[in-house]
Image 1 (tube, rainbow over the protein chains, first blue to last red):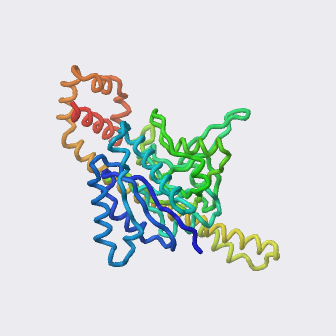
Image 2 (cartoon, each protein chain N blue to C red):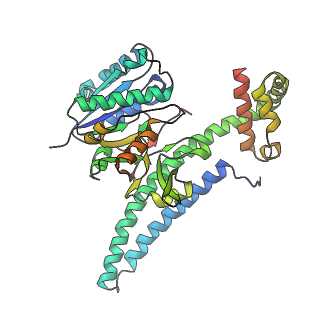
Image 3 (cartoon, rainbow over the protein chains, first blue to last red):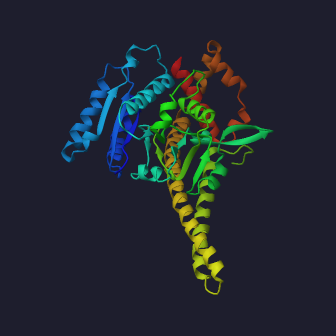
Length: 240
Length: 141
């Protein structure tokens, strides 16, 4: 019996430029037992949510895989004081978490709607037998473009800081093996439900993303985070 | 086109070239390992076979990284080419406008007065970046 996986993430109308390609990729994942649930935080009284559901209904119902998918509004958004992108993301991350915990999914593949992994991503990440394991992708632009993963460097006796990989370090890090890291992006990460019971996604202003707090919370609870360096996903985070 | 500060285009080209050279070298390692395995002891043959498996894994993932970086670089370069053309056509007009407006716009004044123009003028890529910053501020005025 294949373990039941929830593929989920936040979305908003600003990501519609790549939604058609994204959903086509995700609905064609090769793993046999998964559902896809998106939490839409567009502040438009559910219009975008309807549009996304209709698109999937119109284009995938003939092969039946539309049933795997459902998008729902992050209802809290419309009434919330939290209006910045990071807060909205954290709220939608928690919608994903709460939905998983209310249902019988064993793992969450948290996948953002501009990240395109290979079609066998679930099998590949599951094969590592780790409760928290992510695929790799790049973020930011130009000189600031870097892997969405960090490792700890020692800066003194019993002190370390979590830092990005420099571009000349990547070539040694990405060798196809499983590596322990200090931080992995929430854009493509598999998390076991037992670990999600203990960790809520959070934000606290100052421009820090929920990814950073997730890594911190894992560290304080003694949970190890791994990166499967054989999984490189495309990150289509802009339209050029 | 020489400059002490390397541009992103130069860095990216170098990184991609290094990755491609590494890809060729890893392929060569497999070829040489398979060619020279005869005559080795059983232990050495075993070690070579392990190395071949590891190398194939590295090749697989390095191929993905090269593809991802090439794709990004292609998009970046296309955008840069458009921006460069825009700058070449409108540089004088935009700078004239910026200099007129800087007395009433602090962000513009700080940007124009504190920039390292010697460095910026040394490379089209830096010039385009500055041109885009100025245009962004002017669009928000």
